[in-house]
Image (cartoon, rainbow, N blue to C red; front, side, top):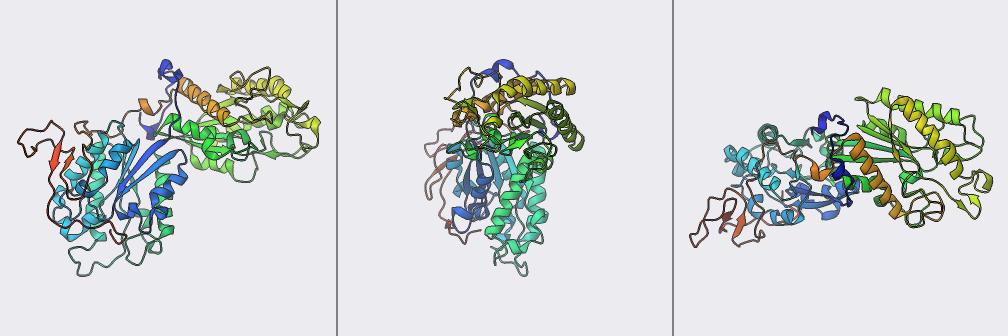
Length: 510
């Protein structure tokens, strides 16, 4: 499926697969690279770490090593002295390759004729892992050091810009894989780099991570998950609630590497617009925090809307106003996001009386004006169905699910009668996942076509770790023979250690 020109194929996904039990597992991302990936002052300032804080559903492996090159013939090639063993053991879902900076040295670029070959082989080698990761080629950041009278070991911006990057682009086109350009956005931004003109400062690393994050979500299917505190979860009032346990995060884990679900929930929000409601309400239309703006900025392919729980308070509920404002929100999204997103309406979970009263009175002391399960059942759900029918939209049914019980389902609900607990959030994620799979026809990670284009699965994983000074077995061309003279199976290759000095991994490495 081409994620850039995403289309919705209703019913194309195999229902049997979609409905089988799915386990939410963190997406694993391996960042292959040199010292710009590794970080110069330890792991805390490296961009893979900062990328991981933005992709909270991911586990990000920093596989960067200082000085390393894409070229096999480089003075410190990643092929021999990188972290292939760790990457293959990690079995990532995504691999980003950020190599080429050190290749620009005169001592290395003299073998530039083989840069295309070695880049192709790097992609093939990594793509052939059992996890069949999605591969991203990263264009190296610019350098700001002088090129006057360059020495053999000097990194050169001119070669990065006019030699390395065009070749990376050529291979990406050949292989049908995506690129992330961290070169162009940082031209003229020397203030984000250290005195050597090569390594980013801490703000620079954070900026790189932010740009890679934005570039990544621009290349996947995006889902905006609109809602209230049940969606936001971190501010839901549930003891110990954290963002990593929110159903949006769990949904990301279920969908996999080719999707991104953004949590656009805001605690306390109503669907109804502000004004003409007493007591005053917090409307999603004008709430602080900019969630509505976030939806527009995301440019989602899919939007799910779960608003109505807070509207169900007796003194706030107005059927005609709720229906009208709901239709207006749908039209606002449809008319201002291009291409038009697929919108699904969510029938919310019910609510239960606590100590004889509906929970969350507004104000809290007003126990007659709490979130009413009766209004959710008798008014909110019918109103949502009416809107869905009028707009020709599908719904995600949380009400007639595990949450619909004559008594409060304490195993998945918190004690306040309104908010699902951690287990409940996981249940919500699975309901969303099954509905998206069967209604929208999206394909989760394990069924996604690998986007490595022409990459051939002819290579096998690293068979022994990369250890300094020891014989190493790599998955390259399968033409070599071990010392006993017996031919190796296709797909294996022995690279014997040499006697040249191996550059260290110190923080001064490139």
